[in-house]
Structures are given as C-alpha cells and as structure tokens.
Image (tube, rainbow, N blue to C red):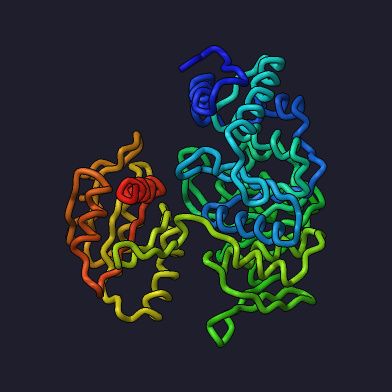
Length: 429
C-alpha cells in the first residue's frame, strides 16, 4: 500500500487504499474542503439534468428506478449510489453498466491532482464521489441521478446543483451525525433543495417543518405523496395506478416497492424531460436492486434478503412480507438469519420483527462496528435463538434445517446479506 500518490498505471485497489488513508477520518461532514476541488473539476453545475435523492430509506430503490426509466427512454444516464456490496464499481453506473477499473483510476488521478492544487485533503467518500462526477462529465451523460450518502446538507453529493430534489422519507438513523429528532434530521435532508426547483417529499408522515421552511425560503415547488401524487393498487393485483394533477397512468409492478417506484415516476414527470408511458413501464420492470426484499430460490428453499437496518426500513420490510405471506400461504413460519451493527436501534428492530419471526439464527458480523453476540442476545431475550460463530454458518444451518413451510429471511444489515452472498458465491464456484 502506498501513501504517496499512486500512478495512472496503478490498479484500482491501490487507489482505494490510498483514499482510505489520505484523510484523518472516513466520514467528515462539511463541504468547505470539497467545494474548491469540485469547482476546479468543473462538476458543480453540469451540462445535464440532475436528480438528487436523499432520505432515510428508499433512496436506492428510487434512484435505481429513476435511472432505469430514463435509460429505457434512451437517455445516457450516470447513476451514483453507495455503499456497494461486492465491487466498488457498483457505485458508478453508465446507462446501467458498472464503470470499469481504468475509468475510475483515470478519474482518481484528476481528483488527486485537483485536491493537491487546492492544497486540501479529501476523505474516502469525498474523493470517490467526486470521481463519479468526473466520469459522468467526461462521458457527457444527459442525466445524473445522485443518491445522497449521509444526510444531505453536508454530504459531498450536495456540491452538485440539482434540477430536481427528492426526499424519500425522514426517520431516526445516523443520529450521531444528523441529530436525534425528526426535525433535526429533516433539516439536514432539506439541504439538497435549491431555489426554484421541483421538490418531492415522499414520506408517509406529516411534512416536517424544516422541509417546508426550506421550500419556502428557496421558492421551490413542493410535491408531496398523498397530496399532489398518489398510487393505488389495481383490483387485478397485477398492476397499479399513478395519479397526479392531469395525469393517470396504469403501470406494471416491478421487483421494487411501489412506494419508491411511484416517487421515481413523479420525479420523471416533473423533470420536464421527454419520457413516454412505455418507457416508464419498461424502466419499472427493468429496475433491480440487490437486498431490497429480494426473493431467491436457494437449494429448493425460499430466501428473502432485505437490508432494512432501522425501524422505518423494517416496517417497510414487514409490509412487503405480510403481503407475500398472504399470497403464499404454504409458509407458516419465518426463520431469520440476523445480525446488526452495534450503533443501530437493535431493540426497536427486534420488537417489530418478533411477532413474525418463529426462530432466530444469529451471529456476529466480521466488520468493525458489528454488534457482539451479547448485545444481539439481550435484544432477543425471550425469543427462540440459536447462535453461530459467523453469519455463513447461521445461513447454512437455516438452509439445512428449515422445512417446506418455513421461509428464510436474511436481514438486519447489508453486511449480513454480504456475508451470505459471499458464502453462496464460494459454494457455487
């Protein structure tokens, strides 16, 4: 590993190691250091239509669907998301295709050169996000779809001026960074709003005052779910209807949640971009995202992967799970392969799930912030619990021991899912 700047001939891993060590901390909220570098790179106001998506949950599904619809229409779309699951390249996609290592390395060279000329240090997340923007600029993307990493106001994604802002919802998460109340967190998310642009708020709760205040201050045009746009399941169970002032569309179900799909549709319609109904429908069907109520058949067992890691995300998971169980009555019990990060609200997540989960198979994840077994066991007091040395062993046990009336649910964290996916990759090699 080199702490001197790598070269354009060095590989992606060398560059990622470099960015991991250049700055004193991995997360360093604030745009003072980032803005001069972004300006030097020419990415602050790109010659493209920019959608910025913030929120506690649903950002990934919304941004994925947005990009998919616009790609179906024929736009050249740059999609930026985080975190990745397997490969860093997953964070940066050009019209649905992950960028290759060399494109990232070339962008890192430019980012490092710019930050040195500015005499500034960048965190891993800042440097890698700016690299995505450099790629979108150089590839002349028509549309940039940007998912906020943490919060909004001080997140590096917010150096780019959007043409349309989406806030999917507000929940209590990352409270150490964003504040310990809904209003404090809403204030951070509202930081992506710019003057005179359309703003979508897709939360099911009442409008936080902080968002309304920012909208008023910016003279932005606010569109809220269940006030300005609506989604209703069709009676046939095979489709759903989107409705807003002057627009009604009958659309197919995709693999992602209708709540988030409808928000993406609203954003497309408000953007002013030329998109027809056929492309909206095709984009919905094409949109896929690992770990969002992802249903797979493995060794003749049905397994659902869901990365919900806070109460709001788990409420959403349960809503989809109940609907699934209603249509698949052969499943009478749910076996959970479960682990979480120590700084998450484990007690609230367990409280939500315990009336649905029949048996828990728990293990400590092999990552620095993993909850120890004692913390998981404490939250699961009174439940039927089996513990294992690692998540892979818990999953293997679930596969081997579950019967045909049991559904396997892998949940609690992206890291839990990642451990199982890694196990499946090794088994299938």
